Length: 126
Image 1: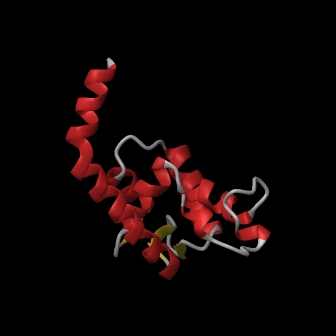
Image 2 (image 1 turned 60 degrees about the horizontal axis):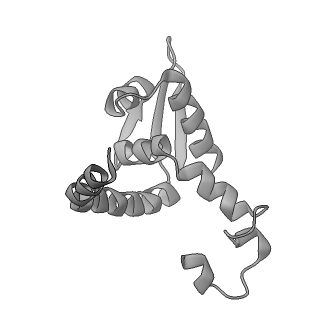
């Protein structure tokens, strides 16, 4: 794991420590909905309903929770326009765009090894 390569890491930045901020952040963003939301936003600004359409299968509740978490962590900006009804838009911040580069790598890895994983699951029994 990458964390083992780090020396003299402050306690709050050590992913191996259960009480570290780094682990909390990692846990927040390393879930399927957060990764899919980050990928869907990409370089675009989207409204809530557009995001819900882009991320197939996400419930209203899970989309709301994940957008709040991403906003809390400074990865997504939420803009409310004073209209009736209110228009709310979401866009990635600079750290969110930087994380998206990693998400893109994960997506590429998934596409590259999908056949291998399907075959392994078949041999495993489902």
